Image (cartoon, rainbow over the protein chains, first blue to last red):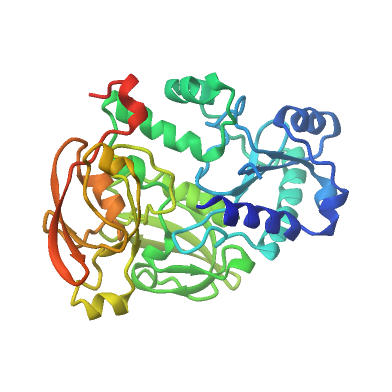
Length: 52
Length: 343
């Protein structure tokens, strides 16, 4: 897929998650998320996405 | 909802166990809902040849997130059976990827994983183009159209799915006995069905309050998908780009309706440098060595990738300025392959 539509789609979908997403502390790597999930007992929501 | 989760967004797959996080790499966005024991509750995402965001939807994502929390509680209560973790496999274990991308400090994007796995197979002489390139089959090919905002609710059933008794309103709950919650789950399991010999798949559906089993007879080439959106750098390289003619254009030119007749939209200058072909922008390619259509692709470019070996000459039937002409094509190996000497 050409880069521009791909970027547009990713941005649109991240916005789609909703305004609550802005309050979410997104980790940028798996290890940090894994450590926090182990510490807190929360489930993980892992997003793999093309680089914006 | 997301505040109840630990969230991560990952763009670089270095250090990621790609065996655990197994999914269709040609998605721009794909999610896993799981826990810190690396028990995967579900996958979310998926696309097809129609649209990159076909199965991404706010409502169905919300359903998945709610279900994920429910499954997490069940897991903590010991109510979920243990998953068998696959043998770990990391991007650095793909030698070509390690040498060409990681060794140069480049980001290992999702699509590179599948591409380099194919390249590695090709280099080692083990590439089976049909089984390795056609990943993540399309459920619409067996007649299942989902009501996407409602997760795995069936919007319509036609062809093999209808013949097997699937009905509009059914909710798919299991694939060959494995519980599925999302389209991502369903497609992931469908991808694991051995091909080409498997003849049936079994779907469990909820019809109202009643659970039913639906055994679908798989049609010929059930695993077929259009490959146009996949990033394929396998051999050969042909140095032109095309767009498929419309049905109306094909009719006007009296061409096969299901054929891969396509207009050349651009020609790489390398074509002239390496004497690959003499195609011009605007040419219409109608056939490759007399073949006008193919069961596996609607793209003349993919047809060449699947059927033509680098270094061997084929003849393209071309319409140029209204005249039918023949244009020889001798596709190359990918230029960067010279160092790896693929046999």
